[in-house]
Amino acid sequence: MEEKKYLWFMITYSKKAKKYQFRSKGNVKPNNRISIIEAFLQDQIGKGKDESKRNEKDVYHVKLRWHPENDTIVVKSDTGNKGLTAGILMAYLKKLSITLK
Image (cartoon, rainbow, N blue to C red; front, side):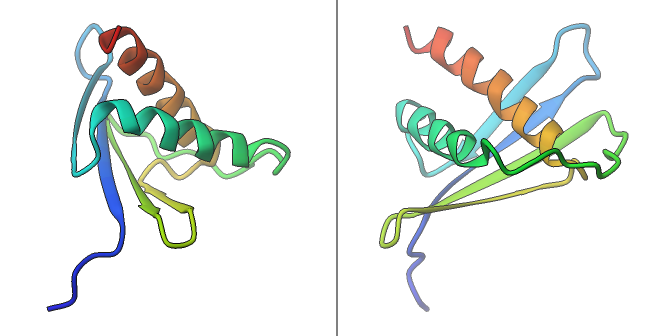
C-alpha cells in the first residue's frame, strides 16, 4: 500500500443551528491549517467570479489537500460554487484564529 504524499483536513460547515457550526478532522495541526487556507485563498485572487449556482444545503463539506513535494493545494467541496467555498474557508479561518489565540 502506497503511503499518502499529502496532508489533508476536512471542514464540515452546518447552518442548521442558530449559530453556524464548524467541525474539522484530518492530519494537519490546527495552527498549520491557517497557513494552508491563507495560501489557497491568496491563490484565488484574480481568478474571476464563479457564476455557478451554489448547492442549497444545510451542511457543506470542504476538503483540502496540501502536497508538500510541489507545494500545491487541492480543494474539493460540495458547495457547487467557488465563492461559497472561499466564504466558508474565510469564516473557518476567522474562527480558528480566534480559538488559537
